[in-house]
Image (cartoon, rainbow, N blue to C red; front, top):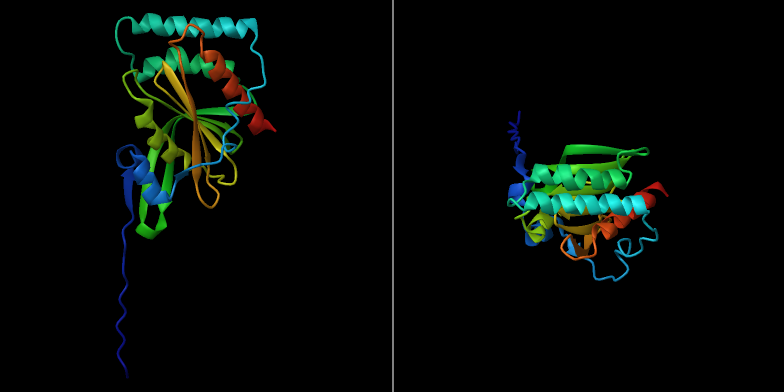
Length: 222
């Protein structure tokens, strides 16, 4: 009788935190082939806001700006303070706390690289959903943090979108500055960025930020 030797190879899946291991655009390109789009029409949603703000909304945004600079007068603001005085009232004005949207904080997401048996896991600061559709993923940082440094981490979170056939939008803020990003994860994952909006100019650019958020909400509802 012949003798057979069966050898089973066991590979243990490794798990790494997104915020520590996916910190650069180069890493995202290497691991997920993420590319920046070269199509001028890829991300026009932040340009086509097509809505006017009411006087009440403008007054509320001016109040957010004033509170931000008042608190900032004693030094840099922490992430939780920014969420309280800037992000939360802004999302409320955008209607993201009301039906048909759901608002979740510290949502755990993960991306699996099957070829390497690796899972990247992290927590999104804030996530707005319509049923199971991601509307916008939000990452907030303290005032001293550069938006550019937060973008790769945010894009990594967005790659975990369970509906890759749909676009997902992101917003990164450090309280005084805002930038938007769009990700499409069909076949070749691609992204593009908006301009940076700031609370520093005399004209309150939170007006633009709110109009863009409302635009994202309308797109998700269509």
